Figure 1 (cartoon, rainbow, N blue to C red):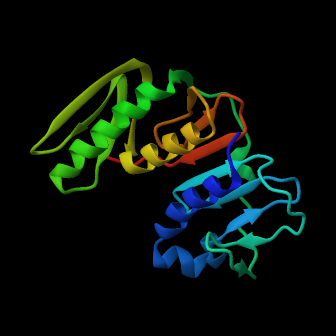
Figure 2 (cartoon, rainbow, N blue to C red):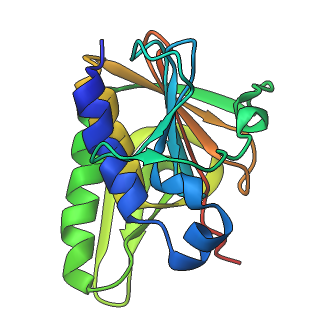
Figure 3 (cartoon, rainbow, N blue to C red):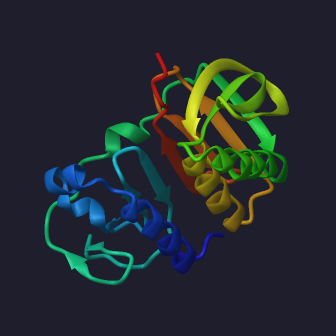
Length: 196
């Protein structure tokens, strides 16, 4: 089970990455929405983390990671969590994909550019003018480009929930990748990057 304090530490990374233009349009995104049913959600408009039954507040408050209340309405994100039948669902060993993603992120940062990975066929890879790195994984039917740092952060949060496996659900190369821990108590959506 994921600890509330751990979720809020990860939420701080999400809210820190919000662009100023997004903050102006949706100022509530600087906080974590605490639903009366015990769920909590945080988003930076590119990724959304939803932790189920993680707190005992009933006031529907929006709280920043450093504990301040936000007094504006949180955007309606419920439509993002309606689950359609995925085009592909892959269940992976969490330590393996976490290691692969960490290696790609660490090596990719040497290229001093945004580290974008590609999930394609039987591997996850990063390619730049200077570097190429591949890591073999189960077969992917979709060709999806992701910000590796966002994928790595998501997998670290899944690990913090004591999950040994992770489920990746692919819908379309432009629709959010859905990432779940093994008991479904943690859902993460990340928008892919359009490369063409």
